[in-house]
Length: 263
Image (cartoon, rainbow, N blue to C red; front, side, top):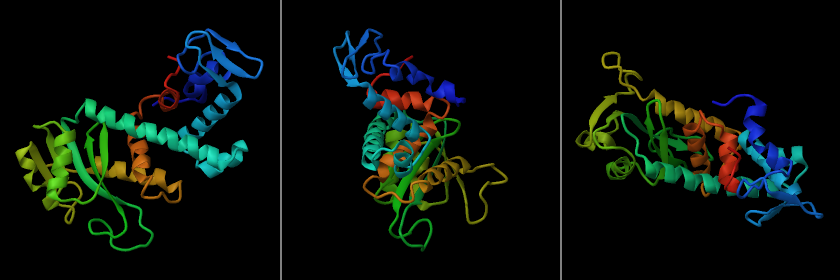
């Protein structure tokens, strides 16, 4: 994973100085009298003050700063912060789905469901009321794919497995009956969580996907509650962060938001 403040945010240096076009990456730009950066190549222009503000907001997004707190730090209306955050999350949602469509998961894959949200305490796990149900597939030492689902029936689970995993892969699940037909699609190993989390004899486990659920819930905790309407976008953001954990995420966020970033 990219470390170091200058190394992470250095890709925005020329944009912040108004020396590079945010739309096409050209250095052939002019500063206008009214404070805009105009590109001589693509003819597009943008207010430098607005560009700097948006980049500062994207830095806050990268650092997972809640909108209300970043609004105070930057002395900007919280609605402005929220608009940028939601616009980026919507773009990330589509990028993450496109990435999943381009390449199915393969090899050793862990499968599990998780339950997010809910205003009141009650039953945990399957059957919990008022929670969003999420199905996840995690490729060991690789990527993860998540989807908000209406239920965890065998038909629903197999639909998403066939769409996002290669046939003939090795699958690891708990003993939930919804996975019983999985053996027709590849090798299927189970671990009975009522007895143990790692099978001592076979070493079967789904600790990877369960670790991802913990990672996701830790991120969501910072926001002190997310509505069901926006939850799928937050979930895809978490998926995207995980899948690109070895990349410069801030650079990717710039590219997703503006459509271009310095190489």
